Each structure stands twice: as structure tokens, then as C-alpha cells.
Amino acid sequence: MIHPEAVALVVALGGAWLAGWRALERRGSSAGRARAVAFFGGLAALTVALNGPLHDLAERSLVTAHMTQHLLLVLVAAPCLLAGTLPVLLDRLLAPRGVRTIMAVATRPVTALGVYAATLILWHLPGPYGLMIRSDPWHVVAHITLVAAAVLAWWPVVSPSRLLPALPPGAQILYVFVLGMPMTVVAAMITGAEVVLYPTASTTPIEDQRLAGILMWVPAGIVPLIAFTIVFFRWCAAEPDDGADYTK
Image (cartoon, rainbow, N blue to C red; front, side):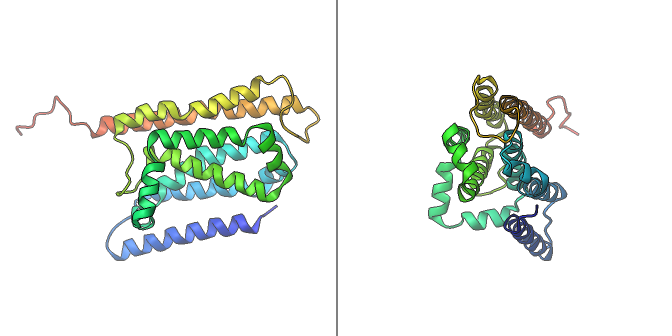
């Protein structure tokens, strides 16, 4: 099933990016192919998470489908959209002093991780999760807050902003090491639960729940590891070669 609101959001974000890209082209600048791939990859993840078969299965209260949605939003859509955002557009949003001050606090590593962990834990507690399942407005709130918290969490690693840039590479490596822990803890609690925590349409609710926990657990370790590897090799590539002959 296609949801017009989700499609409109994707189209609006894509249109804003293309408008910014055309403005850069007129000035003789380039957005870069990697940035375009990241942004539209994030839009693709957003589309898959909020439309079609996956969303329909989630609407039927399958826990595995909900967890897959959350993984796409938190581990794919949020970092890709942030990394692919044009710096000029992002800095324009951050230009007002009040906005920049708030975001400077919110994107500090400790604050960002705290907000991310709290949001992730909140929406996977049985009470809030059940509320999200029963109410469409609360379901929308859950998705918005998860994506927003994930953007804050990924900001110290992939921010393209010149006003509030990402951490230095060495600090990024330490940060990414911690980034996967909140989701790993939540996944372990879900997988190891001996009782049914969430309402589900599955005929085998405990198996559905455990599979959902495993689906969350594996990417929670793999995605930060991929980010760790990318940051590490970028850092190595940026370092001068100590053995190079600089007299030539």
C-alpha cells in the first residue's frame, strides 16, 4: 500500500536537494556524486520503510516487520540523508543563532548518544510500543522521533555542516565504537525475553519477537563496524606518508 504522506515527504526532500544542487551548479560548484548517492539512498530507505509490503506487514502487528522498519530508519535513512545533505542547505538552516546554539548542544557526543539511547529504549518498552501499534498518530510520532534521534546520533560522524562539523577522525573512531551499544542492549533484551512483550499477529509470538531481536542485534554490530572501517581508512588516507621524500 502506498501512503501519500510518506511519498510527499520523499518528493519534497528530493526536490529541495535538487534545487540546491542546481543552485550550486549555476555557481560553478559541485555537490559530488558520493553525496548524491548517499542522499537518494537515504530517500530510498525511507520509501521502503514507510510504504509497500514492509509497512503493510508492520501494520498487521508483526514485530519483525516493525524492527526492520526501525533499522532502515535509524541505521540507513538517517545517516545517509544527513551525509548526503548539501552543506550550504544545512548551514542555512543552522544560520539563526538560536537554532545553532540548540543544535550545538544536541549534537555533542554525550548528549546525542543519550537522546538516541533514551528514544530507542522508550519506543521498545512494551507500553509505548503497544501505544504505537494501536494509534496511527503515535506511530507517526515514533518514526519521527526515532529518525530525529538517529540524525543527532550520527551527526558527530557524518555531518557535512561547516558550522557544526563532524568530530575529528580519531574521536569519530571512539564514538562509533559506542554508537552501536544502545541498540545492542535493546536487541539483547528482546531476544532473551521469556515472555511475549509486544502484541503481534503472528501465530508464534515468541518466535516472532526473538527473530525481531536478532534482526536488530546483527545490524547493530555490523553498521557501526562498517562506519568504523570507513572512518579509519579515511583517516589513514588523510595522514601524510612519513616515509615520503618531501625534498623532491
